[in-house]
Image (cartoon, rainbow, N blue to C red; front, top):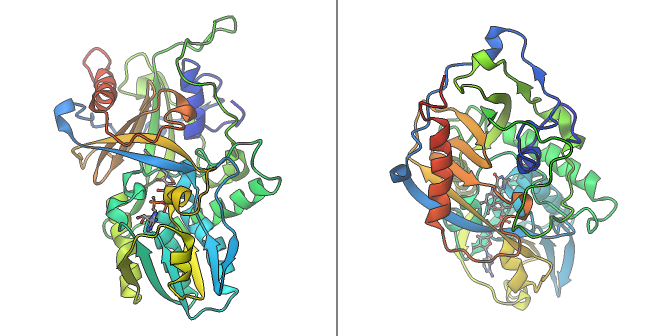
Length: 395
Ligand SMILES: Cc1cc2nc3c(=O)[nH]c(=O)nc-3n(C[C@H](O)[C@H](O)[C@H](O)COP(=O)(O)OP(=O)(O)OC[C@H]3O[C@@H](n4cnc5c(N)ncnc54)[C@H](O)[C@@H]3O)c2cc1C
């Protein structure tokens, strides 16, 4: 693994695909029994506890998100879309760039198209910069793609293809990630817990692959060169550490632990919408079919945060759908840790324990625009977790 001493979700995906989440990870063992952490309450991983299965399309652009300007007659359009699997994580940083471009025109009023993570953060930052803001969108946050995300700090998940991103993009990405990270911190410790830190465990029973072993057979399409920038911000988040075997409840397993920032999407979204309305923001339901309809709003400045919708609206055919599905189990207030086990991720959000299969890695769902939920996939992921909590596996 390229990132010494760290294992991002991308790293976990890659390591898992090789047969072991711990393979090649230079984790340092923890030093004392204090590091073992609190006792873990088992996740009640039963398929009859699934109360929601949601699918959404990540708006992936090989060149990275589009944050630039365009003139439509008298209207300055600032684009802010195409964030792949990183839209929540990068939202504040990307929107800060977009709002800087918007405010160069000194508008007293700004229109934002879109009410997902990017639209709301753009709107709030434009308010903070002194503008009156109206959001125009087909859907409000609870109906958007953003509301169906996993909710983890994953700032370089499916953000660009290395060969297609411009030479300056890595530095731009880093600035966005650092700005976003700082701003998410302002939402820690608030009522409703919109943002919080959790422990995340990676559990594996598989032995690391031997050098001579053949790669696992797979029906997945060939991997693409997704850009990996995480090592530019290694200083922001803790390292993964291997735990001594007798300090974990998982009998005979290799277990590593790190800490990760998560977004409790229901409450985070609610907090952002409240902040926007309290600051005088207006929402108008509207659907646009062509850019001229946006110019016809007669606004001096418009920020375009339409996510995957920009493919049809702006004819941006570089936008590629990457289908993703999450299931939610009924929340357990005493389960406050995340898990990675056999290519299944569990995230203990306050609005439901998110369970997601990442079999197939970054290519999973690539180019697939089908938004129909697959119950069988959700059940399989939950049954995989159940295996981990079976008496045979627990110490
Ligand atoms: C399964 C899954 C898990 C994910 N997990 C994470 C994660 O853990 N962390 C992370 O950072 N990111 C994650 N993502 C990615 C993240 O969800 C997206 O990057 C993000 O939601 C994009 O936000 P957006 O505001 O650009 O788009 P959207 O949320 O899609 O919002 C677009 C807005 O524009 C409006 N709109 C679109 N077209 C039009 C039109 N023609 N007229 C009017 N309005 C229009 C829509 O109604 C909506 O209000 C995940 C994605 C998926 C699919």
